[in-house]
Amino acid sequence: MKQAIQVFDILGEDKLKLHYTDHFNKLVNKE
Image (cartoon, rainbow, N blue to C red; front, side, top):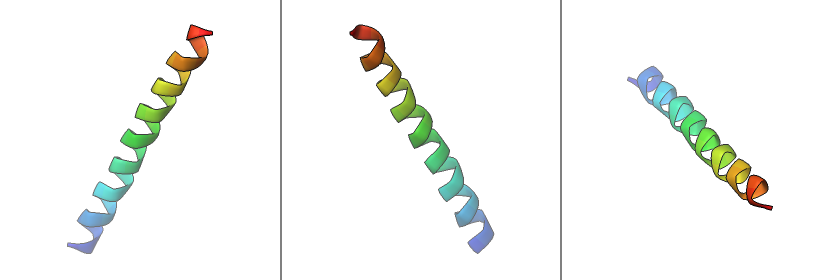
């Protein structure tokens, strides 16, 4: 069970990083 939670934490972090990176790239491209 703990392993499953760790995997979800890692996947969640990756999705957050992708989301913020995409958002940051859009802001940079606007200027």
